[in-house]
Length: 557
Image (cartoon, rainbow, N blue to C red; front, side, top):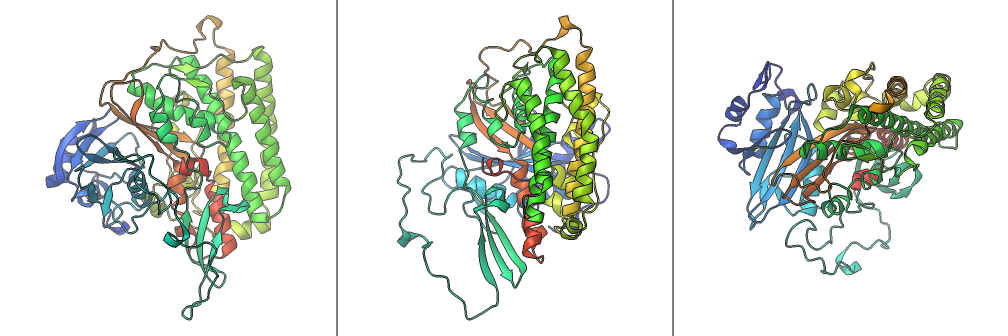
C-alpha cells in the first residue's frame, strides 16, 4: 500500500468519548474472527489470510499509522502473531490485531505491504517462533545464523540439537574475492567489528563507485536471549535487573521504567507520588547521559578523530553518572526501580545531593553553548550533516521510527506528553522537533532535549526539597509474590532515550510471564538506514548510522 493512499479525512471509529470498537470491527469486515480484551487495548482476531486487508483499512481509514510492535508466541493449540497498533497523533488510541494460525502449519499473511517496519519484526517472529509469513519480501532469519536448526521459542524446539555447521554446508568465509564480468558495483563488508558501527553491526554494502547502491544491516551478533531470561524470572524480584542491560548507555532507569510500567499496570499496582517524582528526575538524568554520549560518538564518526567534542561529551556524561551513582549505588547497571516505587530514598545528606545536581544544571547552559560552537556551528560538520541522511516523515512513520530520529523528521511524538506517566504531565517542558529530516536535525534535537531534561530535573529537585519528611513513601504495598490474572495481556511503553521502549507480557497465572517481548526503538530505527543511505556517499552512510544512535544490546536483545 503506497503512502499516497492514506486517508486525509476524519478517522473511522473515533468519537469524543474515545474509540468506537464496534465501528472499527465493522471496518475490518469479514476478516474479523472475534474480539478480545487486553489490559491496554481492545484486540481484534483476524483471519490469517486477510492480515494486510485488515491492517490496511485500520491504517488508512481509522488512522492507526504506527505499528509499534509485533509479538509472536505459541500456545498448546495454535501459534499467534499480535500487531500492536497506535497513532502518532494520539498513542493512547491503541488496538491489537491478533492473528491465530494452526500448530500444524503456522502460516499467515505478511503485513509488510502495509507497514514496512513489519519486515524485520516478522523475520524475528519467524526466526525465534517459527511462523511463516506469506508474501514477505525476504523471509529469513535475522538474529540467528541461517544454518540454525529449529526455532528457539517454539514448544517443539530441541535444545540438544547440534548447531555446528561445516563450510561445505555454508558459505566459506575464506573464499577468494572475485570480480564479475558483469556490472561495475563492488560489495564491501563494513563491520561487525568497526568503531563506526557502534557495536557488533555488520553492514552488507554494495557500492557504485563511492555511492551506496544498497546497504543491508546484518544484526544478531549480540543476541543474548533477554526475552527468554525474563520469561524464566519472577515478576517481583528477578526481572528488574535485566532491563539495564538492553540499552546499556547509561539509560538503565529508562529501561527499568518500561518494565515497571507494564508490570504495575498488569498487576494493578499503585506508585506513591514521591517515588514518581524520583523516577522522573532519575530518568531524565539518564536521558542526558545517553544524549551526551550520542553527540560525542557522532562527532567522532563525522570528524574521524579523537576530537574535543568527544571528550566534552564523556566529561558531562561522567557528571550525570556520578549523580546517579550517589542515588543508586551503580554507574551503569542501576537496578534502582522496584515494582510499586524505588529501592530506597535519596542519599543523605539530601542538601549535598541537591546541591550537586544544581551545580551540574547551572553549568549546563555554558557547556551546551560550547557544543554548538564546536559542533553545530562548525562548517565542516554542517557540510557533512546538512541534507545528508534524509528521512521523510511518512517514511519514518512507515518504519515505526520514534524518539529523536522521528522528531528530527518533524514528527511531534513523545510518550512522556502523549501517553503521560510518572510526573511528566505536572511539569513545564516542551517536546523538541526539527523539520530538516537530516543528520543535522537529529543532532539538534538531542542537544535541545538535554535542555528540556534539565528543566524537568530542576523542577523535580524543587518538589523533592519541599516534600514533607513524614510523607516520603518510596514504595507501595506490593505482594511478595505477584501472580497476575491468567491470560492477562498488556503492551506498555515509555519514552526512552532512543525512542519508544515497549514491553508486551502475557500471564499464565504463575509468578513468571508466559511471554515477554521487548519493543526496542533501536530495532525499528535501524531499519531506516537503507532509506537514508541509498544514493549517498560512504561517509554520509557512516554519519547516518551515527545519527540513529543505536546500541546493539537493545537491537539484538
